[in-house]
Length: 236
Image (tube, rainbow, N blue to C red; front, side, top):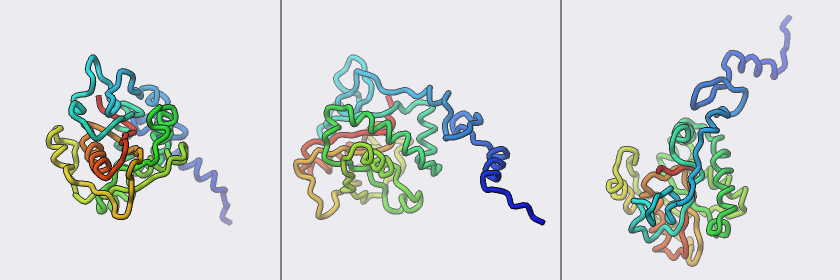
């Protein structure tokens, strides 16, 4: 006679055999993906910040990447792209840990709600992926973040940009090559009007800002009044 055991028993047994572990340090945890010790190591940007991208600066008017910026009017970031955030972002972006959109999205929403410029924007616009990259990855992390922020803030998501150029990864490129890599990589979708609108570009990470600023250029050239950025993490 077979003994029929409840589902909770098998879940408990599975957790015992394969316990949850922190994706950063590997320590066993009961739930979630990141342990409290690693969460406590996360660093948030503090003033003074670059007025264009939100990167921490010292004794200068803008960061080195925004000295001649004309299209990105303002930006903020939830965290700094330093350990352990770099590893958390990697799991979110490349390892299918889409649940992490909640963590970053809620943090970004908190910034938006309390920011003088961001809180009354007209639209959230996620940075688009090239079509086959999204097909291969099955999701666009910027879109997931936008959905969370929309739910928290009420600002509608407008997927108005198309990535028309299959750009190579920016990871090992310097600032100049990053700019060249994304030049003319985006266009506005046909039939969409953004004239006189305030738009927030949403993405997971900003390094030099080349990608977001190219998106901002397209939006400004198509009539956007103000273009802001809000990212999960930013380098410093």
